[in-house]
Figure 1 (tube, one colour):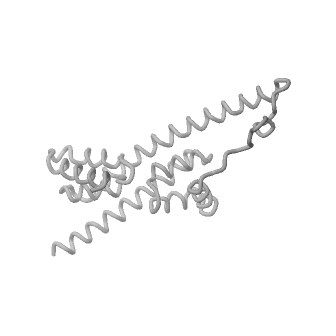
Figure 2: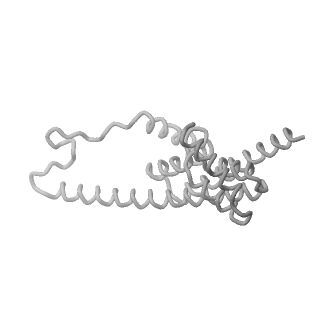
Figure 3: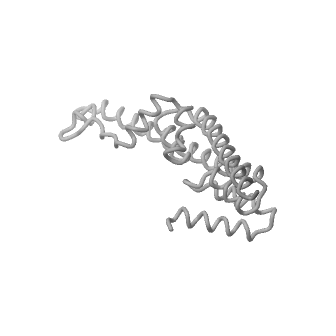
Length: 188
């Protein structure tokens, strides 16, 4: 069994073992994990016996909480990196005998080439924007990674949080409805 599947099974077992009042908290904690997220956490809760609406709400809250934290941290890191880069550039340009750019330095290069995955993600963002990348992103990568990459590329954090929130709600509700419809159909 792969590590994520093993973790899902452990969360399901934990939900079944704790008192009803704590079960949504376990679902919210499960939603913090990449690849489980809100939709997976809601599924865990439903299988564990929580009402689907509570399971979905707990999954949404947990997933959005971690995505918010990721966006805030990534934003701070990006701001710090930009400030250090600007400071380095100002010092390099102002100092006599120091190359103005890395490309002017002996053996220097102007920029590192982007990985294929990053190029593909940048193409998605250019084509669909933050809304499209947020809504379609869960088909390819966890919302945690999508949010970090969007902010890292320079998207406004408020815009990223808005669209990540919409995506988390839509995907979690859609999967919850699918699961409850399937389980209702199977149990009849």
